[in-house]
Image 1: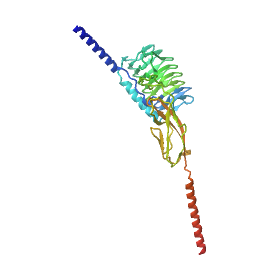
Image 2: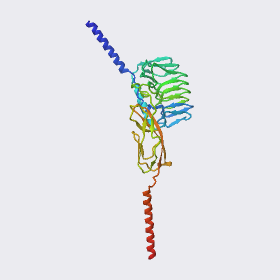
Image 3: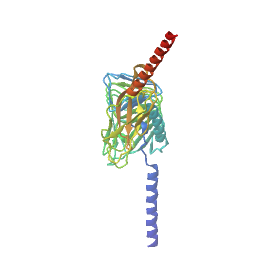
Length: 375
């Protein structure tokens, strides 16, 4: 009896140890942070040919060249050419890439190039020492878990053949799929791709390739050709999946729709607010995005207050800029504003004072002339 009990205890201990090991090795979706709002991000250039449709932000840093929009269309986001938003996104991409590299492999292919087409993968960190190619469908089985995370790490390139695809089944979500590419990624013509590509160098999407996820290139260019790239967001609300944020984002609008103009030399203060976010998100963080700027002398606080003392107006005195409001769920909205810096107009008391002074000056001059005539 005692021996049976000891066997039972040993078996239970083994189960606990195995479960504990599984928990330790469990893959984790990295937070994309400031890169989360981007669908396309390059380092040197972002170049588009044809009628691509990008849902989410498009940016480049430290380069400044984003071309091909139009005819390409950016919806639900903005274009940042070398600005602060793209810089923050590149920094966040590097942090996320390092997180992917730090996680222990659950499967390891060993040396040599590997074709993963026509294979099915379960959640885990799938490591490949060299290049990864895809010919045919790759199936990702979430096993009924909406928070299932899939991480694919290639030591070199990722290349998909024409009409290849990544297919999600049993609850798997695009926001929780990550492809860490050691050099460059190339998506073949008409590829239907799923997941966030974080490529060390460049990313090329050939004609009519579609992506549910993100194209984030750390050191090179992103080249597009009549593609559809849709930034992925997770549909669950229970804290799972950090790929695109743990919620489906509602439309967030900023108010007021227009801002009052500023006057040089006159103190200015205007608060911008955001609405239609999630009920639990009552605090928004505000920042300038894009390449525009506030009038000299004014600044935007993280609480959404534009304040300061405007300086003399610049050329034309017209300033265009964009403000992004982001809530704790990483959902955001953007508003474009135009503000003029006007020259101060004298008030009535000021005009009266000037006229009085001028009148006294004239009167004094006339009296002086009379005295001289009398002499």
